[in-house]
Image (cartoon, rainbow, N blue to C red):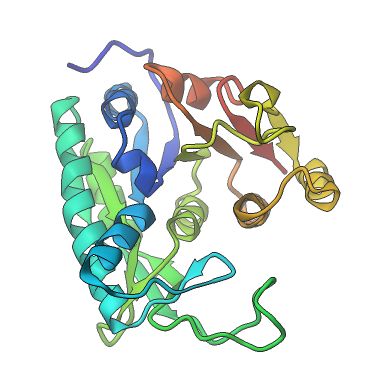
Length: 279
């Protein structure tokens, strides 16, 4: 059942990592999303599925190749992403939202196509040596279907988008879910982009959840990267987030380990639960 929430104006893009979609907190997050939607928020949910795709590849004996933390997507791996992300996880996330009282519509990037994409050309990645690397069937977002998304949101439906994109010739591409969410937030003029994972925010000490930083500007974030406080995969997330802020997204929130009401509270009170990134 959807809980009572005061009115909420604005567009929210919410990205759920694969570990969240397959985790115990899914029902809690779905309840918050349903409550925000019922209160009038325009919401688009984007989700990944990296951990589940890796597990299926291992079960099927398909090698998992990564370069600087990025999945190399050959033809077999792309099939895995279609089955896991655009299939099983999208259905399970929509089902959880239905149970919470929302009106989800499951989409993948080729629906519409909601996410237009082009193949990413070979490029040099930090930590992967000096030579350009071809990641295979990996795409970059070139556009989104505003009409379809706005049609759904105007009628109180909640688009749930798997991180798959499609080119003009029908070619399908695997795209990082953070990248899709950032682009959607920019294109839709979102008030907030909420990145929900198994990390509670940006931490001064990665081993101490109590060291969460509530608010972080671009200059402060760069300083923390240079000092090594922000490291590994969080660097890419932070750098892409600040790029989206420069393109007009008002706020980006990094949050995780959520309890009932936490997602709604962070949307209404930025920095109260996770880390809010500001220009």
